[in-house]
Length: 138
Image 1 (tube, rainbow, N blue to C red):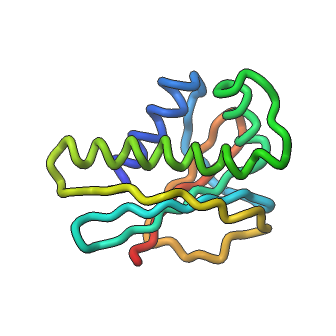
Image 2: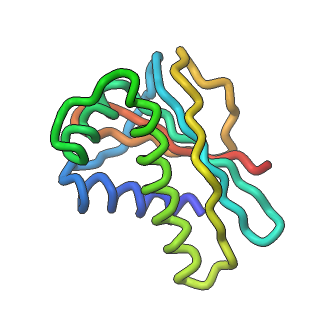
Image 3: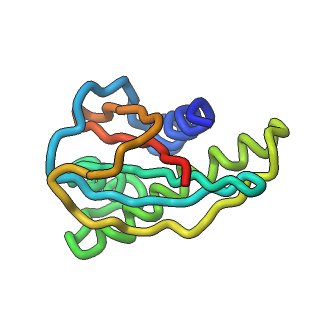
């Protein structure tokens, strides 16, 4: 499942937004988070996406063609989660790995460090800013 998420992340960041994507090494503090559930038959996976403020601002500049206000970071965070995980869900369904369904994204707020222990995750670096995507089985 994470391979589809990594492919989807690269597709979103590089093919759609035009940002080069690299492996990241450290997330840092003060991150915004979103979660989105993915259902496969009777199993449930919660994907978590953690973004630095500057990373979300880069997304906004390309997607919305302007700067974003602090109060709108929650909507943008959820939309990026929906785009990346939704595309990964479609990839998984297209290759016949099961009947995946996407839930509704939820904004988790801004925290120093997210307390969720992920089963698998990947750090990405874009424009010298990092973000992390991972999941935990429910």
